[in-house]
Amino acid sequence: MPAFLSFLGLVFLFSIYSLQADTEDLSDVNESAPMNEIIRVIQPGVFDVQSQDFLVRMRAWGVEFPKRGQPGYEAALAFTEKKLISTVPHISIKREFDDLNLKVVDIELFDQKVNFSKEAILLGVGWHNEKETGRYGPYLMAQLKAKRLKVGIWSTGFAYSSPMGTVSPKPKLPTLYDRRQGFIPSLSFWVTSFGKIHRPGCSFYERGRGTLTSKPNGTDCRICGGRNAKK
Image (cartoon, rainbow, N blue to C red):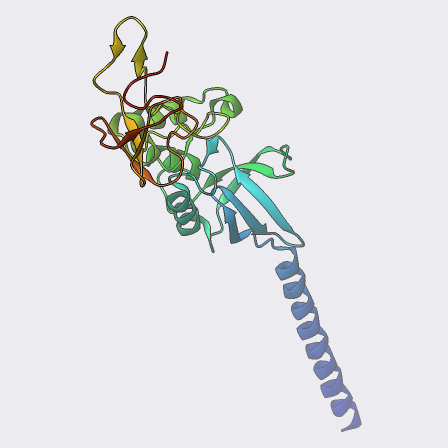
């Protein structure tokens, strides 16, 4: 009888040891398996990925997006959030770090027919960064199609690549005066709320309250001459 009890005790201890070993092995597997889930979007094309031990900030390769305050920014942000948040995509590192200390990566979504950057270019929410990709063919073709269809950013007429981020300004009153022919019909005078008439070039032109008109009524300015230019 004591021998039988001893045997049962050994079986019980062995079972506990096996259960602990299995639990430890499972724990090791879970800890070693990287999450790689995109948990946050910072701005269009920039996002945080939760890896096994770290939170890594990354940027989509080969595509640029409007900046905050520019036309299309909100659409690009919504696109990035919809496509990436809570996904576990296949990520290929193109550059370890760019000038902003972001990992530059190519993103393939398992449930998509095209990758993230190409789809963004194709839909016109971003444009192809040709310098970064070396004029990568599929992205070039996607941008040509977006331009032809005038979708997204290609319908705004905004100069995203210019240094100031704006379309070249056009003068409000182009060539109002021709010294050989006098005033041209499109000349606009500034008539203040007090009825004073100023011509383009006058220090009071478009100052304070007033209106622009080509047929002014009121008192001519003593400085510029108003309707009658001073020589």
